[in-house]
Image 1 (cartoon, rainbow, N blue to C red):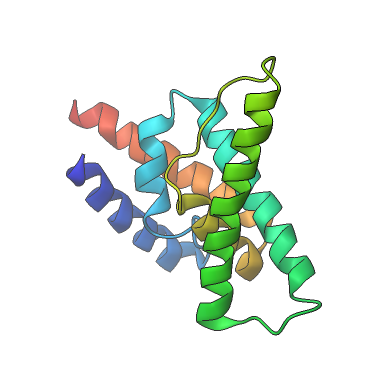
Image 2 (image 1 turned 180 degrees about the vertical axis):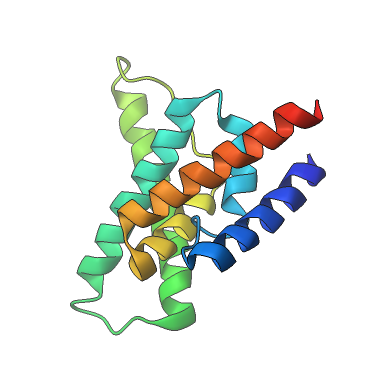
Length: 140
């Protein structure tokens, strides 16, 4: 497990150096690759990140948020959103039972959304996760 996280950090850094696009943070692809067989969890995590991004964007019209404060607020909003969504899913039994990949992963992804856009970040995250999965398959 630690080897994949370590390798994920290395591949993320190399990808960033080659493309100047962050794949959702350097730790995120290494965490996401463990759940590649559970696309609903990956999609839910990215969905929380997208909603978080838009909430932070809305709040920035009314509050002065930048730097570490913005990053901290992004992490907190992502965690709170997940808790709210869990309550909603619990009230609606026909919805599938999904969960996040880590509590801070959506906040980290959302932070990159604000720097480089949703499309670039999600596309880059997908590429790095696929590269990591291919490396995992070659090593096994």
